[in-house]
Length: 380
Image (cartoon, rainbow, N blue to C red; front, side):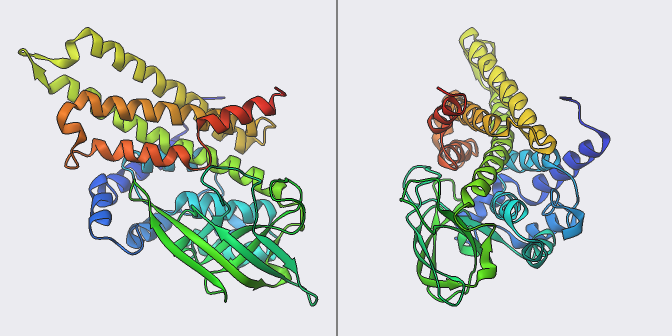
């Protein structure tokens, strides 16, 4: 694969970087947090992103998208990660739209995806049910109704941007036991459905998740994505794409945290010299640099693999998520320590990166989960 960006990709990176720095810097995340904004993100910024084609950058042109790929989406997410921009990109453009692209009918896609590309429609994947990422741990039941359609009953946790979603992609079980891969199905549930209750929760990094309760929520037969009981085939691919996309965002964040720390090492003085001249800190900075480059390489390969339809996408998704998780946690912790006492204050923005690292670690599975998955995929 090429590690050199094309002219078009460089233009996308430049546009995204300018937008994020001007309209969604870390100070904007602080403002959203301190004002207790009910959405948790700026709808005005999201509309600007949609006008630039970012909301539907990886959607087919037939559905109003830009017709580009995950490589380009990854550049956008990387720049969003640099400023810790709170946007619905992962929840809507990757997880929700991904479920429609991979499992939906043409009718379902045409009903929702143009709205996603235009910034009008927000989606969310309602999947998790426990405290740890477990893809097939699905207790929510979907009972087939005599006249067609289904009745959904259960609860979901950690639904990214679930409180603002216009439509939820709900993972439920039509058959099989609670931890089995077989019998899982995916359903489109509109936000106003009777029996659906959504409550917002704010995570440590000031980003959004939600709890969802479904009390005998009825959906028509047209709300089923793909084939009943075969939803795991769709879900696996959606989660792989989500892990890769989140890794791209984390790559941007860990790069920014590293660069801010190196800049600080150059200006902070002790004993009359810059602390960056101390050999021990040089060694630690060198290790962080190596982690950045390793993370960059695996993320770029994983993004390219999605576009090329390579068989190793599941393997690369887990490698990317594990590597970026570990690198982000290491660099964020080192950033706090190297900044010294001011590093633990809320006034200094570097602390926001550690909080994001902790939340992103558990989103779509931590490094331990993905190392275990990688081993199982390789037959160990």
